[in-house]
Image: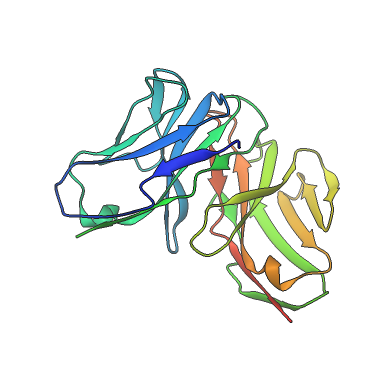
Length: 114
Length: 111
């Protein structure tokens, strides 16, 4: 089944403890992106990747890191999580970096930082 | 001004009626527009895409685009309780392949 897989689905952590949210797609998509979704603010882009080894900041990149060493994987790293990073996170992918295609979203990761 | 504006709702319609969801946008350069459906706690699911002025129909869904008025809409015919969800309007930016989303409209279909 063609899909974007995120793990974990739920995560509660403490301030300052490094964590990684994994994202993997099996559709050979070039483009991958991370979004966070907060009440009243909607979906906001954190980072994106046009292809392997090509990443760039989105609208709210502070406090996050990403890497794209393989085409299928695009992990999101929080080096020192803070409570304001408590949110619902979505990974998404698209076939081509410059195209009319929409995104396919992963199931989401609900992160709570205490 | 937000790039994509939607009425947050909730929009309540009776079962079997037509639900009309609207969206305006500010970026005149954008060429691709999308409607996503999101159930509570779930991920957004693409239901329609539209690139040209006019109407595009897919089953019970019709997307309408008017680039001159910078207006996108989604019509859902024969609305069902299972259509109750938040509907997100999105446009694709010319640079960076980014999708910019509206805040969403909550639709409630009452049986």
